Image (cartoon, rainbow, N blue to C red):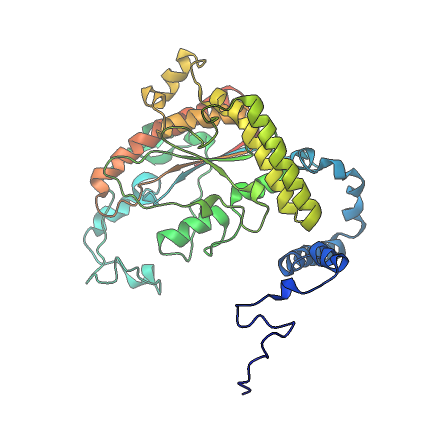
Length: 416
């Protein structure tokens, strides 16, 4: 190994960090400008990946891929591009996804198994568990006894569907639901499981369902985000298992397709209100100035995410007006509170968020996702499960019925 150090004072030597760097070399300005215009390694690899994807798609689709090229316009960079709809009429215009984080026990709510009563306290047969890995929570158990549900079941609707007694409201709409009993997963722990349910992959970094719908179907409004996340307040004494923004992330898609999370307490979105001493006109001038700087950055570096940032600034400015109008429910008639219940008047509750989801659907929000945490009831199933069902059952029924009465269920995908 050559241990000889570069000669100090050489034009290409920085004297071990104490002298001029290579950026201080006497390089002509024209060459510096050329370097500045060239894409960085990150930009090059990112664009190359998209180029290869489009090349593969072109091979698969042939000339059909070119049919809509003439519709593209450079003038659509800041708004219309994100509002363009697909070239076919989608059956569903929007989706409302009620996500019970923590895994509600299906054997107590939907999966009626009366035969379990005869097997009480008997060991689970190896033929049932097979080679499934044990979780850290159960690895130390000496045996795996069988137990039936603590609650009863009853038939509901014309279909005679069995529904747990903890869901009396949901039982009323069971004829309109499609129940999937065949789902399975390799995930045995909560974190990879909820990632799989939200992004289709147990590994973080993939776009969420709402991000894909935003990317594929575009926006139906200019004043609210395409993808909104509502985090409901925790039920007292329930499991506080956390959730994180990677569940509503845009992954490798543009950041503009990420979900915008509304808070369950205080201001729905932070920093929307103007600070003291700033009015709407001043704020508009500030946004214009920031956007002008961002446009210069785009012209300098050519990063498309800069345009996404400009659109986000514009959306945030419009949300200063649209969000207060959205959450102001004084215009709701008495029949609304009869349907949703008094709990819906408390901001942050699941019922309140269900009503908020309906108002968002009316205003063109493409994808609304409501989270209710606390369903990891291993430690106190008998004590906590009735409280969680009571907090969510009526709101779920009310939202579903409200959409149906307004004729919106025909073009809304309702997932619960």
